[in-house]
Amino acid sequence: MEIFETDPGFGHERVTLVQHRETGLRAVIAIHDTTLGPAAGGCRMWPYPNDRQALADAMRLSKAMTWKNAMADMPLGGGKAVIIGNPRTEGSAELLHAFGAAVESLGGAYWTAEDVGVGLEAIRIVRQTCRYTFGVDRDPSPWTARGTLMAILASVQHVFDDDSLDGRRIAVQGVGNVGGQLVGMLTERGAHCVVSDVNETAIAAMVDQYGVEVAGIDEIFDVPCDVFAPCALGGAVDDDTIGRLKAAIIAGSANNQLADPHRHGELLHEAGITFAPDFVANSGGMLAVGGEIHGVDHTDAELTEMVDGIRTRVNAILRRAAAADRPPAEIATAMARDKVLAAR
Ligand code: NAD
Image (tube, rainbow, N blue to C red; front, side):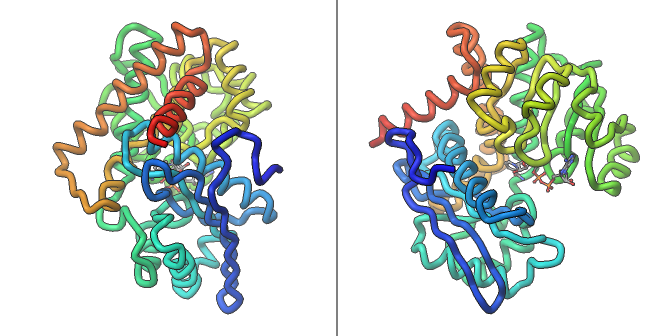
């Protein structure tokens, strides 16, 4: 993997490796771009099999945050942190305090928040040693779910020329904080959801609450559906799954849904599958809590309007992509890059 990458003008500004001997903390804090404002993005805790994968994940995710914040028109740059370890057994308060101290030492160049494996409780502990946290007082996940719904509505309208979800079959991979709430919103609009999750309790709750159909962890890729919504971890669309997906649309909340953004974007385009760019579809949470960094507090009515704007944004991207006959993710990335370049 290249660290000083060859993407002209868009290599990472700063990548910090943190090791705290007393607590065993090992973390990567990646600051991709601060042109538009301080780098902002969540902190993920995951038992990465090796250091390289952790580094690659932090770098990829932080770059996606630059595009996400730019496309959401927020005065924020892109950053992300990853902690190497199992959140269930290794996420002690001491370790989170050490992580907070590391973020604090960057003096506000990077602001941290919740992500997979690092919930709100954990971020509240990080806040005890760090001023640069956000999304602590308001849970972003309902807003991320609402934004994802907006991306689905825009995509369904684009593909079927009708935005009704009544009777549409939607496969949701991962029914955690975001996916679970999304299933509620989809069901309310008459969609028929098929869900998968590695967590049996989460699945049972979905069956109880919404009477959803359940698919196996691997089976979810073979489910004939109108929309496939990846809401688990990144990389759902890869060399294996791309030929199996039987969806007209991919629109979900997960970050980095395409294992290789360029190649898999092209392959989806060739296959005629409409892809709502992940960093736009899942920007609702950032819209909801990113304002905290600049001391701005929006009302729920203001946030609803802001998050519902994701529908217009996805719609514009899909129309431009169709007109140019190019993959939507490529178009959205180009739009985000232009916004950053214009601000430099
Ligand atoms: P979460 O941890 O609450 O939920 C993820 C769910 O996916 C869990 O229930 C987990 O058991 C399940 N899962 C893991 N591996 C799976 C697999 N192979 N197959 C099926 N299910 C699997 O996380 P979340 O907050 O709901 O976030 C979901 C995704 O959306 C993540 O990729 C996250 O980065 C992204 N995202 C979340 C937010 C937010 O506001 N929470 C904002 C932007 C992006």
